Length: 466
Ligand code: F0G
Image: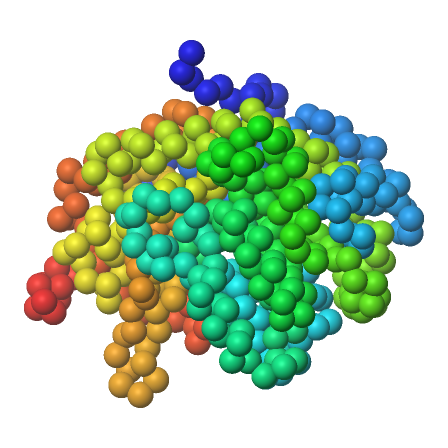
């Protein structure tokens, strides 16, 4: 049979209110056309992020009841440590409250001002934590990732040639750590190949640079290697994951993704001296090393989540559900980033709404229309998020792309929810020319997307502008 089944039944449900287009139009106006300012209870299908938004299993909920809340030496910690040892092979395992806490602690332990950290592409918080310490975060995006519609695998790879020649030119001691993000969220959740992982590992080793993975979506990366790389076809997903981790010296994990939990993170390494520094900083700002800012029950849920996430049937279903959304959007002509990722499908809003110039935020126009028509919340990853005003001329500087990310929370939505999303797109595709651009009325000096106030560009102004 063709259908790929969800390998679970629904045991608890969370009702949401069905709202009307009129109601949502009013809500959107009141939220100044910024969906970050809309209350979650006014959203029907929330595709803002896959981070911390997944559904836990009955086994995770029952593990929470038996979590050990002891301040020191919690049984739940030792259970988690055992699971993480088996998964990654790393000697030292530190729980933290989420990914960015791991970033802050790791970078504060190894980085000094003026140094640099290379990566395939740094996630926003990773970059911000590096820059906060006065160091530089450098991206070596693979050239294949620049063409959004090219359906080629491994667009998450690091650009090895560029990285290699850049490393040759760096003064000794100026690159204290090298990274790779699996999957590469900044390039549309694209996976990194095992070949690239191996080559990056030996390149960093050759330069004596400790290699750390940002492994928030390690299970999804392992899935693609298992599916697409003949060498790994007959190996278990656990073998693939272990091999990926084995190529690095440590990792940071935001467990809110493939940890299948609503809160939590991990920082792991092999180096004893580094572990001692991490432990001290952890105690200073997160908590004792056997809980790291989490409750014992959170540790217990995470240990169980890590046991579940590499299940073949779960990842198979996850691919099938992402493919279902991608194929249906593709079939009605919505331009999407190829290949589709497991955690999200990205829409090329600039290509979908070509009459809206990038300065008028086509991604935000699409996000607002999706909310108005379907009560669907997506996120703009484009000029609203990454654009800025030129400090000298005051002219808007637009982002390289204007994308809209439709994230798929883990084990939360069913096929009819996805059908609803596709219907909202189908309505829009029939009348794309009606979509209007937006202008920013108020913006913060940084990270403006979260709080900006916007309004639709009036039609006369839009025509006069062109
Ligand atoms: N690294 C990657 C690759 C991420 O995608 C994220 C978070 C983090 C680190 C930071 O982890 O949120 O637990 O502190 N990504 C979320 C997203 C927020 O929506 O993509 P965190």
